[in-house]
Length: 252
Image 1 (cartoon, one colour):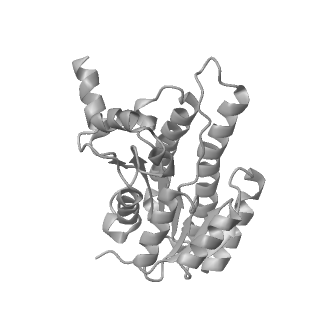
Image 2 (cartoon, rainbow, N blue to C red):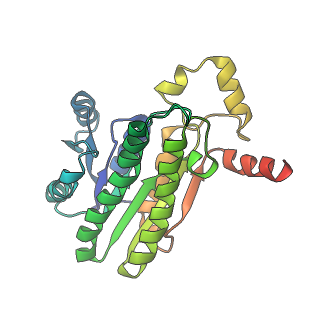
């Protein structure tokens, strides 16, 4: 059985739907968690719902302060065993309409911040000769998507970066893996009109949207000692959507 007793865990983007479910999962498995986000009201609510969680307000787009942030989180936790890079953003637009600022902001937050958080976390993990890093990518990092060239590039970049870092630190007992969610039920998807939602679910072999717990379960597995011989890999959590997409390409 998976258990995270005495494990020190940092989760970014912890106040969103997926992030919140990841925190909930680790707490249920006795992990010692520091959760971070940019919305203090949501962080306070997270703390209220999960009193054992330590929260830190931090904007991961402030690259100059990421090393200090990792130091602070590690101090609160008295170490750092597991990092979950879940925070991210999107600024969708068709390529000809996309401003350079929109491109750079999404790349900076989703990819560069993930790299820097991983870099400084690894420095902590090397001292203990142990570490688990799980990066949240996306199905569109594998398939691309209309109006999301910046977002798709950032998520594809996370996969390539994760593989490279996995090779660099495999001998140090530090594993790095990705989880790539598909369409996950959230407040945003709740606002989609039913006809559009029907089209989306028709592309998913399991014929339903996923939920945050589906993602959290895979994150917990990759963070556990049960996954100690897995590194540089991606678990797809999309109800078969990516598999079906590949099949359509072959038959095209």
